[in-house]
Image (cartoon, rainbow, N blue to C red; front, side, top):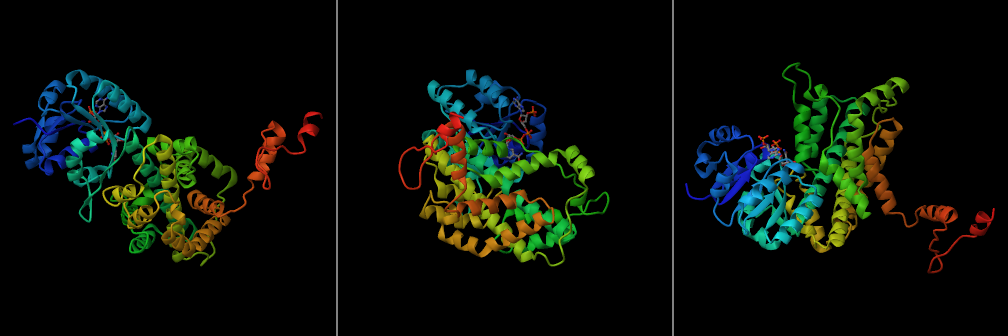
Length: 473
Ligand SMILES: NC(=O)c1ccc[n+]([C@@H]2O[C@H](COP(=O)([O-])OP(=O)(O)OC[C@H]3O[C@@H](n4cnc5c(N)ncnc54)[C@H](OP(=O)(O)O)[C@@H]3O)[C@@H](O)[C@H]2O)c1
């Protein structure tokens, strides 16, 4: 076989599917895996597509099997594995050969790798790939970062293998260095928020309204016909309807209520704090996962205090109000995610294409939803405006905030935790406060640390009348 157009290293869940997708789109692809035994297994499963794929047990043969200048996708776990793989590859590569890290890298690592590559005069791309195994196989959403020329070199392949929204490829160049992986990180942070909001609505139905899983599933199915139409609502309906083949009971009821959190959700929160761009709904979602993981503590708490949650009085909440709560919560969490992207774009000098970010998420990725198309329109009109203030979404919020407020207050009144819904409500109430209570914070800071404050009636830095009294006793 002649030299392959592109190479993939790492035939795990994502790499294997991505290699098949590349072959399926007519490109010849060379593959390599650390554990060589996986290569023949993969080629066997590839069926007819194996004609477009060459497997190489040795890294140097893999490199030799690629057309120059080489383009090599890494699909290995983020972190040390990527650095180790790059270190092994570099001595085998020529100056124009390009490494493309397609895993879920921390964007700081991508920045460092891009800088190192630039100093060495060699091309490097960090691309965020979303959509799980199915997306990787049949069309993921791809967020690219690195030098524009490096992106241009492989854009035709990445666009071909990406998901399509009304024929438009969901593969977009985001900016230099770690921009692609930053956008992917925030995507995942929003994914955490979306999932937690849905889980809280399920909790209200299950614990507050006494509904079984199948009944909850029917409500999700119904919501999927309206403004909430999205992949995550769709699969929430499906998992709620599923039966455990072993016990015959609803599958959901057999799943332990303990969730972990990997890098990207946590990184979104850390970056938001570093940049001073709050994402409280995403933060609540990450915290909720951590608390869910502390099962022993929760069991001890439940034993010590008894359950604090009561069923809600019959008719306390309607499904319409619950749907409203999710609609408002979703808009507010996306507004926070895009605010974070806007702040990062300015601070890191990326010029992130806000509307195109919403566009690239419309298909292929886990957070794909009908609403993203309207978000893309709102961001086209005003890329840096908070989404909650865009007229289209402001009108939706006006129509749905009463539902969010009622659901959050009713659930909390009944002792049911709804941290993400409550965070969304508090964000909205703060966002709409012309006067917060930060004047008290400033007074306290000036009292104990002479930090000074701004006055409402006068420019400049001022102190309160307490400093002399305080310091002189
Ligand atoms: N799974 C998803 O839904 C998803 C979605 C988006 C992004 N991602 C990201 O995609 C990347 C790959 O994920 P995955 O789910 O495909 O992982 P996976 O199924 O665990 O596969 C990992 C692959 O990396 C190889 N590998 C592990 N450590 C290595 C090392 N030190 N040096 C060289 N190769 C090494 C493994 O080779 P061996 O066969 O030798 O172990 C295997 O081929 C990760 O960054 C992940 O976060 C995953």
